[in-house]
Length: 217
Image 1 (cartoon, helix red, strand yellow):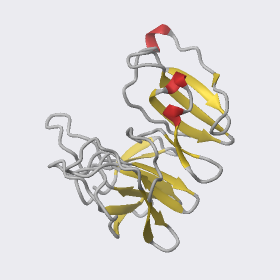
Image 2 (cartoon, one colour; image 1 turned 30 degrees about the vertical axis):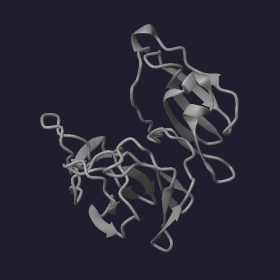
Image 3 (tube, one colour; image 1 turned 90 degrees about the vertical axis):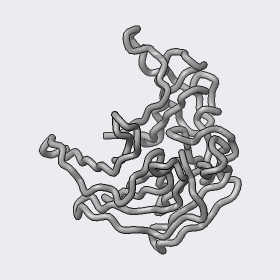
Image 4 (tube, one colour; image 1 turned 180 degrees about the horizontal axis):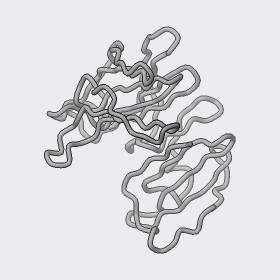
């Protein structure tokens, strides 16, 4: 969903859906707007997207929801501000759009978040939700108290390029100890749990990963 044109490097509208039962790809209905670096989250077979930037690198405040089975898009109300390079995470019945920055403040990441309540279809703004100054992409975690935290700050082994996904009561976490360092893979229990290295990475796969993502199947 989305991404860049490999020739022009401009944001695209493309949507592709992989059917696990048939092991086939199909073309979904295009996103209504070109966008890249946006927040996304899934709940009940619907994909929620918000923020990112357009072809002119303007930060977007618009939001949409895609029904995978119906192959239809529906527009949501806008967030209170544009948020480029924000991160999306679904917590219970809420779609959180974390941090990001405006068009004129590139790289100056917001500490606030915007929360879309799926039951009421309303946004609310949460100040001081992201108390770090780095990009939130792929490294947002949610503690038992509901507060957000950054996996990159949880341990020195994953301070660069941290990427995590919850798996039951554990989190599968990867990252590097320093810029250009080899990637490590860990399991961790809870926000402050000890990292347990689970995979010894073969040398041919041990390079540095600038940006990554996980999918739980």
